[in-house]
Image 1 (tube, rainbow, N blue to C red):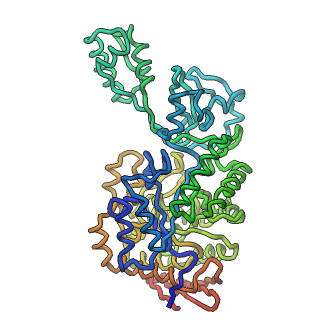
Image 2 (cartoon, helix red, strand yellow; image 1 turned 45 degrees about the horizontal axis):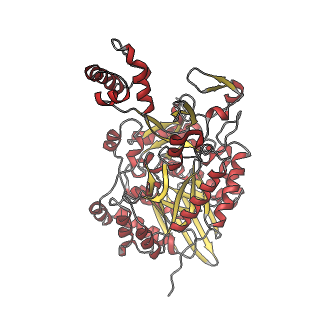
Length: 553
């Protein structure tokens, strides 16, 4: 008998090196008999591409990273009937991208002179030029601007003519100064060897201490100061994610080429990362500008339709802002960032009332979601504002932190929570019954369930990884790479094998579909979720009192 597969079956979510070291290892795991029919889709995080920073979210180009995977790996996934969800980073590209490297090499003569955003051209006539060479926008134009980090979002870039030009840089940046030796300085200026050697000792020590060239003390060698600083600045290198100019025709050519490439890899869903930062105008927030953001999405959708891919715009906003509803009403898929917190809340309160209310809203409003428990990011909390009372959100934060989680505040602002970084298993108190109940409920929630690989294997908080990562390494708590041996060992455990049974049920049961009928009811600690698709039914009966569940088909 031919098997039935739902149109919104489960989706694995992992980095290409999360499960064994290379994408081929992930595919080999999915080819195991135990995994048959478990997943319909695979969201491969963007280090599958040629990238440098942020574990993939700083893209050099969208070619397959040969150290991570190959076209043959993608073919094996297709042979399993698994389609892909892939990332498209609309707002920025790496400093190491061919476009930005051409700009650094050729300056204003570069073909890509307007591919990125020249800060001074953008703000021309709307601010005052500073001694440092960038325009400080007038307060009236910048008072509502949304910042991801302290200070203006600028990277000063040395051009071939020796001028420093500011370019818009919303996210990460790093300037790297070459550590010179005596021969380097002798080749760049008229200086004797011993003086060059002593200057290099001083310069390299102070660069190592974090000083910029202009801040170095040249006492005793004042005559060489300007030439040494010029040498250092002329030879500096960069890491970073440079914002793209969406008003450039070449950027739209890049968008078109990217969507074509992603479709060619087998993507049926394309996640739009950081899209809300892309449209920029003086005087606006430059995050979720309206109607600019929606106009941009509409233009990208025209390209996506050409290549038969569905767009999934990624954006975090509080429930009260109803951004998720606006995205859905425009015909896009949207993330259910509310489910992870609501599920933990339901477990703690032993009541599914708030969870049920949200589930029914998704169905009633015909919102097509991708939902999840854990992911490569943190457990969302800002999103719950307006859906849960503030004191209950704070209780959630305290609970997850008490179980080893790490709070991430909103872009460094104190007293404004954003997410908590933790594995979902640890956030649930490392309780197998809670983990299985959470997975069962996810399988019955409206939408397409996305499964973080570490949740599947009941992964625990990895505090050692956080320590190794250093500053800003909090997300590594939930990104432990598993060896094939470790996966094989965990596959035999009940908490893993029973999750796989739930995935297989969700993927093959005829009751589930985006367009099936859904109902949810609660009574004290009990909750019942029921799906009906053309006479095929499936029900989940939950009791939060003892974290038990029963599936009735």
